[in-house]
Length: 100
Image (cartoon, rainbow, N blue to C red):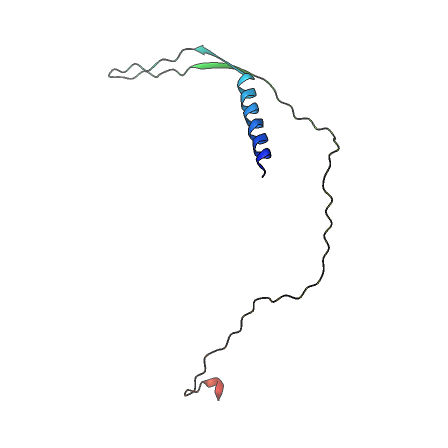
């Protein structure tokens, strides 16, 4: 990835994050309180929020852009490829059932 592309992606990410902060409006509608701690415990209360969020719609449109046209020619070439040759050990003094 070229530096220019990385910078463009970074700038786009920062713009998207900044837009997300402006598209959400959160208002606290109830205060939180801690539980009363005595011999018995009364449950606490979480705060409640109303959130109004914006909407994002993805659209598609046709555009003409320049793309590279690459032609590849294939030809035969002789090259050396790796191989393997296995030679089993020789047992000079012993006979097996297969030798009989």
